[in-house]
Length: 515
Length: 55
Image (cartoon, each protein chain N blue to C red):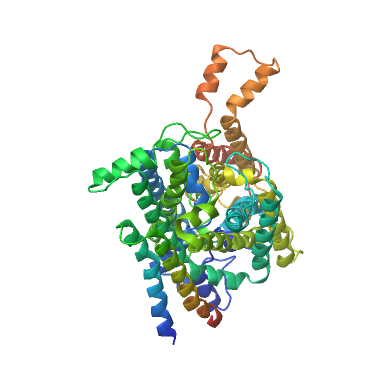
């Protein structure tokens, strides 16, 4: 069965970790703790995190903040605080367990939840990676729009808008799939070579666009006050969001930045990586990724779209290709293609490994091709996924987060209640019902909370409920936006797992060994 | 040869970013910035891609 560590990263591969593993005679410590001789220093994690969070999707996420009508203070401070919380989550949730257990996420989950539940987790992970790869294909396909001038989907389009667009997506998707299926390792090395160049191109997007804003608004910057005035009155003006978008406040930005990689830190996917860390504080290296990719890159990408709107408020298209071409010429277009390519192919590969874990008889090559085709279909037929990338990322975090809560409770708390940790391992169960139910109920509760208003309206329309004042109160106070629901969701899972385990383990308590 | 390529690669990153700062300072026009960025991009990959083949 494939390991989780092979697909736990959505951006670039992790060469130093791989080299370390290869050096240890191909020992990858899949089913035993990483020994002291295989541990890595701080610099390994610094380089890995700095490179992996600047991806093609940043070119989409940055503009979507502007589309959500974010103000300068909410955006900048929200990103500073949210990214700090993400780093703290890596340090306090993920690293302490990783450096104590030194096991892969997969093996730790298998010991707690059993093999069958881990298979379902792999399936969910695989589907999400496939859709994410589709979003990366969409971003890169916009680069072809620079030369071929076909009509590309707009911000609120749910379906493809031209044959040219579909052909572009198919071409880009097939190229990415070929790379993932045939030359994955070479492509990984290329991704690592491209990373410093790519980060700097993102920076130049920001610098050039900022100057263009200064020229367009005839502003001179003589002090920090002038700078802030330009940012708050011309670039990130706040106000109403674009049609069909949710208004983003400080809280939206903060929670999005915090939970964007929720599956990795609070969801504990990075157990697999941080198990190689000599000290748990090495997780602070994640700050390099957060403040390069999820601060600098998002700000620079948002500037591109804000400038486009400044010139023509009716042009709400988020097309990375044309926007970067206008700013940085062909180097900008290359950046769009390479940022998408170097991240989509590993994402497809990792999705392939997730599905291969479920269908072990299928070759990785065949599964990766299947994933690639599904990704390009998702990209070509459903551009709405990319145009709603903020929502998709929040949903991804929500779906995988509960398993992080289960591991957290199982590792730190469950024994204090006289219960058995690693229950599946000790009972021989292949499906830990307590973990499965906690996951399912949490997702159900969160889905209901996000859709309370819609559900209530539907029940009123069918005359099942009367539209009373109390129903209005429920709609007003019990509807939680998708960006916030994961926080209460974590506590719901933790409490449920503990409570259900009390009942479940009482019924089927493992027999103590005789003698 | 490798050392030379390494230094040219570092210089290309310099060439990639400095023009944008010159543009910000009003000392270079955007077309020149775009051209220099393209040259820097070609230089960067020309100098770094051989290392992939060696790996």
